[in-house]
Amino acid sequence: MTPSSANPVSTDPLPAHPPVGLWSKYAHVLSMGVQNTLVYRANFLFRAAFGLVPLMATLFLWQAIYADKPAGVAIGAYTLAQMVSYYLLVTVVDAVTAVAEDDWQIAADIKDGAVSQFLLKPLDYLAYRLCLYLSGRLIYTSVALIPVAFFLFFQREFLAGPASSWGWVLMPLSVLMAALLQFLIAYTVALLSFWVLDVSTFIFIQFAFEFLASGHLFPLDILPDGLHRLLLWTPYPYLLYFPVGVYLGRIQGADLWQGFALQGVWVVAAFLIARFVWSRGLRKYTAVGG
Image (cartoon, rainbow, N blue to C red; front, top):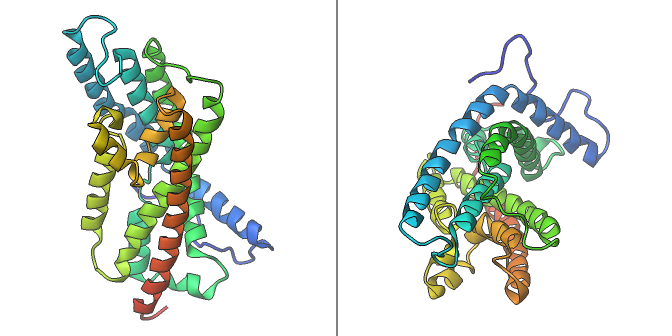
């Protein structure tokens, strides 16, 4: 889909007369990202609506699994209501944090030589892409809220509230760190374009690991305890499983604070790795013309 020619939107990261000050520049990028993303609001609405189809299939599957069991019986310590609540919350967190086209756009910027302008202008590329990611998530979440809210309303009998009042505070904090971690992982994978012509294979491999190990496919705590605890040392559970577990009270006590510490460590580690890969990639980068 291309923007309407009747209302063209600038894609230049800096205006002809940019606002003064560091924060003003990135505020402009954020505003520009919102304007660009608004062009695709109808596309986002349909994507969000049809994205609920796999969720419906998953819920029907689990309802069929629980149908042959007595009421209130748990599978992996999850009752039917808790299992449905888990998937509903995963859908919400995924809508808020998922990377859409950012990794592909970063790879295209490197391949096409568009990053050259960031070497000449006082604008950090990582911060620039983060602003665009945040603006995209803001618009997508606002648009997706319509079909998701309807779906949650019809499933309200299964949707559980937070296990404690702390859930309203700790879950947003965890979701924020999950969004940063999600972006930094995608950003770093896309930077492999400095070395290879096509990063699609790496993007799909990373997505496969994320889909399986983040808790998107199933709650990780229904796995054998050893495998579950091993996965918690990787960054992927902190993208979906951990924020949802915090809300539902599945993660408490020492495990809760250890989880927040590990999530924070992974965010910092992902940022440092992204910086390192960028600096190394620039040594390989060449661009012709301008």
